[in-house]
Length: 382
Image 1 (cartoon, rainbow, N blue to C red):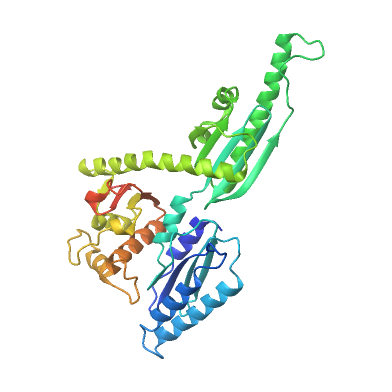
Image 2 (image 1 turned 60 degrees about the vertical axis):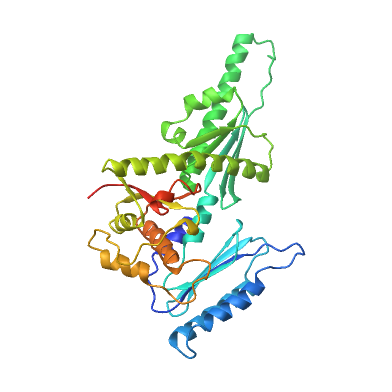
């Protein structure tokens, strides 16, 4: 199951009348090779549990969750995992643990009435799923990366040709022969890439090829596949997976920097023109509830989100529901984040996942600063 599918499943969880635990841990060993998350767990889990009355249904459900989480971390956490996200509600029959190669920046614990998905969706954005095609005239590697690790790889190898003719052939005939070999290789590479894109659900491809292959690739690649190529780069044919990951992630980050501004400007321009754009948390959340949002644009830091004032006019039939959703604060929210902001982030991300809206985290804090950290591109306007 991909992280996208896991996020969609968690977003479908109905708000529970019992505490729902969302625990994020960085499980990378410290400089002395020891786990760094145990002290956080001992302090925070016990401390949050004491905020519920002893022997209450909430406390009993939470105690079972904490016991199960502790047992899971002791027996099932893989040494290769750099982070883990755990969602639990014993009374609501929820327990999902997601181990990841990508690191989470810091430990955090949230207790509310639904899974807190903002950090997990943020991680999906930081480490997207994409393919890298590294090819020359006789070999190719197609590598699929997701969440900071290699998840699939295919190789295509064909006859290696020489620069000079052999066996007495005329140079022109020999060159035609070489061209046919290269063309056959390229068609096999494109067929393989198309299968990988279909099987792995790839929407973005990074291309690395020699100068001789580039015109052939552009000529032979079908339009629907060529449209998925987001950047061209030069990588050594025998680069390690770690080297390819490093360079392609940097390329994806540069791409995001360019496209973030374009998307925000498009949303603002469409909003000004009364078109398919909306800005601000109130109107964006209202549009999400109606299924209007095609792409949610949200600040990459929760500190950049600004709560909706309780009682602020939203201008939809769902005013009361929206105000209640944002105003409701559950016990045990982290002191460093305003509970209303955490709740707002939950509402936006959850509704986006429930309605299959794309989510883009905007890294530049200035782009959405005038709109309280939120905007959207719409599918339709009512």
